[in-house]
Amino acid sequence: MAINFDLNDLLAFRAVAELSNFRKAAETVHISQPAFSRRIDKLEQALGVRLLERTTRSVTLTSVGRDFARKVEQLLDDLDHTLLGIRGVAATRMGEVAIACVPSTVYYFLSQVIRRYHERYPKIRVKVFDASANEVLAAVARGEADFGLNFVGGQESDIEFQPLLEDRFVAACRRDHPLAKKRGVTWADVAQYDYISVTKSSGNRLLLDQALAHVSGRPQSIYEAQHVTTMIGLVEAGLGVAAVPSLAMPGPDHPLLVSVPLSDPVVTRRVGLIRRKGRSLSPSAQQLYDFLLEMKPTKRKTARKVAA
Image (cartoon, rainbow, N blue to C red; front, side, top):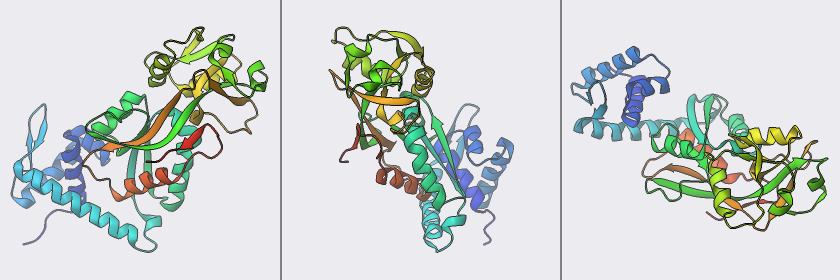
């Protein structure tokens, strides 16, 4: 009996099995929705069974489809492992990895890891979804990202949280600011100057509000921004001082910005890798995941590696 379907049809089926949505699945494999539907129809006709139950509102796997999805997942993973293990193939391997992350982890940490990954696998496309902590968590839970880099998720029953580092909040200011000359400052010191904070919708803001709930004389914001990276831009423009995760700050050689340790109290956040429990990563995603575990920030004293 001739096999009348190909690898692209299996990739399309895996995408819709994971996302339960034809539009999102079609975007994942980079084809139009009508073309995607034709691939699924072709696969079902070749197998002589119905794999999906489709209505105008939902897509679900049939009992045969669920069993077939498990076998397809294993088959595709085995194929990826085989190709990545062949000498010379790694440099030409095609594929895609989607990682969700909070913006404060991107510029001075994640970007370095992705650069190393790209050097080894230059043909694999990496999609970075930078969003709030809750949005990152939701993207991983829904399967829209292979895994995430976040400081929330450890309490979720369906999420596996792999601790990566303990990230301390520091005072961010310009080198010409009075606080820049100090070896350390308190929250009361920061409160004496124009203060820049993130909005109340930010996970970092929630963390700080909880840590400083009983601190008298805590700083009150003059400016607010949606993201930490934007806040750092306002600091660089000379609009004030901000409390930011050390992971978001540049190294000591930056010409304009400096990080000063904050205390009374010391506030930290635990950054880790999050992924769905019970779901294996593709070999390409697993490799990037492993790179993140291996690398750590080395140019900031306030971020330290913690045991997993």
